[in-house]
Image (tube, rainbow, N blue to C red; front, side, top):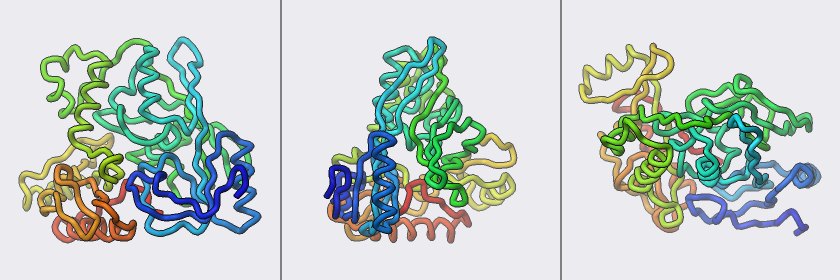
Length: 337
């Protein structure tokens, strides 16, 4: 073990599923010098590298034979009086949202209580309750492991789409997010367009303040999603599938109650994956120590001593049943390692 590298590192506290497994090596890096040192160590020892944030959106299916590098770049900078703010990749996302709200920087309140780090936010293009991160992105600072260069990518270069970005595509050089710069509102601009948020706010939805939206979103999320500290999980395991309008029309003939949401492309609609899984009775089911949460069919949970491959097998069984019954292929939102 060096000052930076830990060998045979227990990853249990580094994944929100709480699965006990080990990495051959582990490094938590706080700046570029430490990042360079960690990557050099992996190169010298011929180790593959896996980048990790807080581990709230990953499923390790086995011990990792390489070096896990946890991006822990910290810091928040209020860059000007017009709402420009920059945060380090390792900054806790929810704490960043709280900082912005306290400093009268508005827009992120709908994204409150999303687990993970600032660095993971653009990779996943996180979104909730009618808002997506891409609406606010100005620049994403990245380190290219192929060239060793630090560059800044514009919003368009990030190629954002639903729970996706250029950072997730396999044919892209490995781009490690170092920081994110956002343009936020300096006056309240509440977004209460999402139906569940409107219903929770009730009469207040017309005149809701950013703080009210923040509080309500937190309340909704806490009521629907289990706390990983108490029950291991990674939030929604599957993406909501996007299908063509013609496909949806055919589905309606067999399933008249199937709901949908509009997308930016009028030729496609989004179907709630939770609804599909609920129709097939997946809520509360279990396979060994892996289970489906009783209140949310999209949330897979570690019921105690589950292995990653057990959870993965359960997820595959769930997606196979949806494909067989509805002809829809579910994609995982959680990153499988």
